[in-house]
Length: 108
Image (cartoon, rainbow, N blue to C red):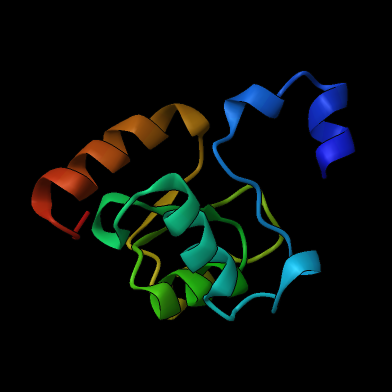
């Protein structure tokens, strides 16, 4: 992961990077909880953006709302069934969904 971020010049774009190499994998909440702690962010002020049911399950286990994306491998109905608070099909929609999520306190 670090090598890929360096190659693309993205290392400064992230406060923290979590992988299953340093602890339990998804859907265990450990990676999300470590990311929150390292970033100094409370669960209610964060969101998990992911393309798998494991992303949504991890977020739920950590008390973090999740946003599903349609450009992964998981069908939208499965993301919704796992509890994704919103589904986006274009990255340009993310800021609006996040603003609504945090403004309303959890519902999108």
